[in-house]
Image (cartoon, rainbow, N blue to C red; front, side, top):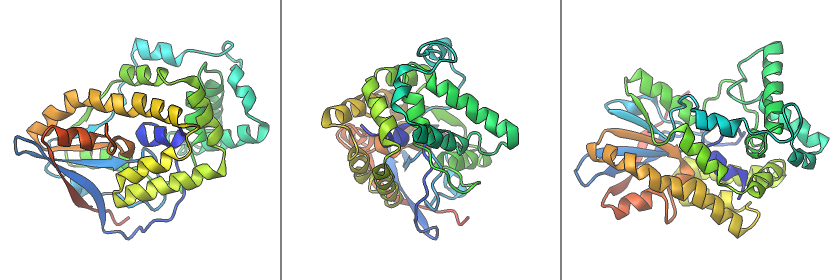
Length: 307
């Protein structure tokens, strides 16, 4: 499985690509519940992308709840235990880091410097925060966090992700935010992924072919061709078995678990749902699962922002 699936699912990547900034609409899915109430689902990539058409703030107007994968709640004790797992001890790089050469380590720190969470910092504060994240990632027992950082690409300062844009739009329109899962649930899923998959994700993130595959996936998001998103990101999997394993744990299992919260919200109507585009298509995709439960799904074009 490639790193890009995790980005479209729950991690983040910044990539420079050419899309029509003048596109007047953004594709989404109108969901009509068996109750007759209406909601909207939109597929995202959890990172800033240069030129990707984004929805206008007005798209949240009139909705009663903004639904995302997770609300960014503070980590619980269980989650912190996962985060604190180290390789050979604090300050000592884990054994898996030996596969990184000096040029890859340099690229990794450069991509951490471009991370949206710290890109706004200046001078020593910026450098110190990046160094701390770099050291922290490379002392973990798992390569998962380093793989996530390696997937970033620098973009123009100020470019926002769809998540950031919609979160602000929800706030401006007075729409409360709700999450489909909590930190413990996410960490439990991630820890169930075989470590060799994370190591492959880290290796492939430095390969030129990863950029092409990711650009294809983003283009598919821009046009609402969600099945092509999965095809593009799966094209860089180490093998079919690893792709299937990652998809089962990080996509299919989560989709089924989300239905417990999602379907009651859709039945009430007025929900604007924003999830990674990789969660939408396929036999265990949210669209398939909802259609099988009697929800009517229709393509809906949302107004795009002009900035």
